[in-house]
Length: 404
Image (cartoon, one colour):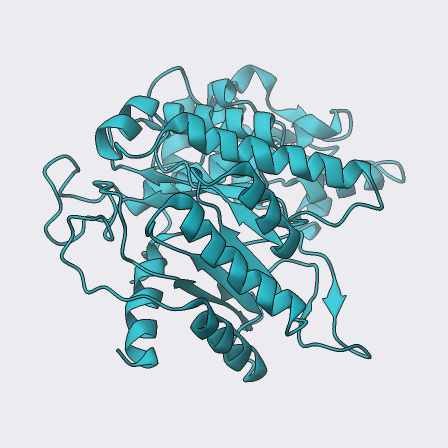
């Protein structure tokens, strides 16, 4: 098979993995040194930046042949998709060629399981090792970790990769048993633990080699099983706390041709994925707990964002006086972010906060104004029913599919 045919098949097969985005890579440059490439340390992702720049990774599978028969996966053993396999040398050549043409900033490499988890992991490591040691490649490398591989191989992968990821795929161990019988939740969390232990050791000893300095991430598929948003977010919260994950990515299940009857035939609303990302951001950046955003069971509302839903459920805290309130509470006001809250606190050391000040700080004033008090403003909506406010502030943004 020609290299371009392999690339067509294996790049398309990799599109279902959302966890390739990254941040926290160390700054590296080949300027004045041997080798090739650089990272800027500000984060690399397979997307467009706000100013229109495309910052991309070569995102491919080593192979889409797989011994496993995960029911939600297009590359499962029983699937009839076209198959292909790169050699490590072909991936190395592609990475260097694409980088030298300024097409990509680095490599995201995953694989189906071939021969055994250890053999597959060895092949992935070979790509990264040769790039780093023989070609002095200083660009970004993200390796997908095979959970069932030996801890020694996972530790070796972290020496050459900027980031490692172990996809948990499903939030419920029961669903994993039913839909991915060859996988075990214990092996997945065990691999995460191996990565976190090696990262801690590297951070503790300055003389130790850097280990996956961009940390680790994972992915959960939304809508492949019956897990609700509460279960998904509680699983994410546990993973953040136990393994210091940089990110949990959420990927709306996409029905694939000839899907087995064990998975849904219809995709969940993409807006559900969007709300999960919003809730996840509140967990990581705003100090929210899952139990504040959603009950023990249920899904996030689709018509309003999770922060607004929390505010409407806690009307007794509002309206909040921006001249007196604690910074962490100001950041919880709909339409006001953490940076804006910090600027408000800094500004009020100099003067009393007025309504126009909030506007000038570029807060989302239409969302914020029912929940704030300033020296010259108190909302007329103060006595309005939450249901009425919810209807007025309803927001259902359009969201395109990940690859469509």
